[in-house]
Image 1 (cartoon, rainbow, N blue to C red):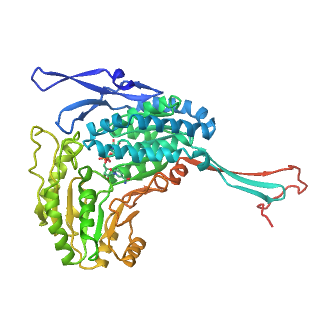
Image 2: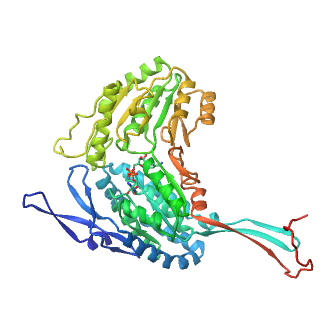
Image 3: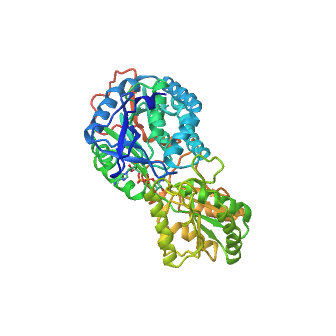
Length: 520
Ligand code: NAD
């Protein structure tokens, strides 16, 4: 494995005590090799199980970003000139390597993010599926052809790569989202600058190494680690033609405004508050299973997590709460290395404190805290970022715990009197990423799917993340810009269309035409 060998050790002094510790230093992956950061700025990467610093990641300066872009720009034309089957075969070889190294990649994710290894394997798999889709790039790039559009005239269109493009990704899916961004873009012939989350960059770095091993030319996939400075450098770089962003809504808006102000294409996906409506006729056991998995899996750190349950009618609400409370109390919280755990620690102390503060807020706002996870401690790992599952009943729509994204293992129950009230809640909410309805009534399900103002809808499916050959994207404050992620939209986003009108034989006896040409 290239990775460990090329990292130099970093010596950290622990407070005033004369203790020294060796931690890994993570640089960047530029021009087909690991390079050290030169800005002198680093961010700590924590082990979420213990709270200890386990690595330092370099934070790129504007000059380092510029150097990476220059490198990518130099490499891109030769890559775009390869035939699409050649590029697809590199993607296929990457798939072989990703399968061979899946446990290693999942362990890297789990170590830095805190999700369990089985969950990390799923994170990788949903990214790999987009790389599988990108293997169809020879077909996906095919244009359209009109024979005989006029006398001796044919018209055809083609899709061409944009050049150098970028992806800025969040901490919560360190394999899936980087692959959603880079696989279609590079298959289409672009060079890619990846700016992963500074909380868990090791998996994206390793993915870039595996692409190189698969035959991707140096400079086509670059990982530049960093924070706001490197994001701003991307937004202001004239050679970057498109930016795909995923993260919180405030930053999505910032990136969208910055990227479009400099004339780039931008698609920026933001936060979420996903509702699950439970109709009186729903299979209650199935609904409770769905809520437990979708509300608490991955410690609630998923943009498609269900964070609000909306039972319709008092009887439905009471039955739901009776079944939910013991299930939430029995959740098995474990180390990220525990394959049997329901979920592991949160990503950082900052995230843990933020989620706990929302539980405090919910209590102050008057919601009923049926299960309180704040007191949970993992024996022997008291400094880890663990939090028990929490459940609120009697949440109302004016509460901050309803309006804002908590992004932790906290589920709120908002009781609706009618189906129309439940639908209205989903439609009036600021966010519109995912939503689900649990019912046995086909009419209700159909009406809901048609009328709900949310981008991804599940009918008796709690986390309706579309598969790689469909597209993924929310509505309202969950997405800014045009076109969705993965599926055919990903190829559209990372390519531009050229339309050619040609006349053979070229000789014309019409003379000069001064009015706009038309076909009669
Ligand atoms: P984040 O917004 O803090 O970070 C996302 C990216 O933006 C990171 O690469 C980070 O380095 C960068 N960034 C952070 N602060 C910045 C700033 N001030 N200026 C410029 N760049 C900055 O998000 P996160 O905490 O890593 O991820 C969680 C969020 O992502 C949640 O809100 C979640 O809902 C959302 N998310 C959305 C989707 C989706 O498809 N809609 C998918 C996954 C996660």
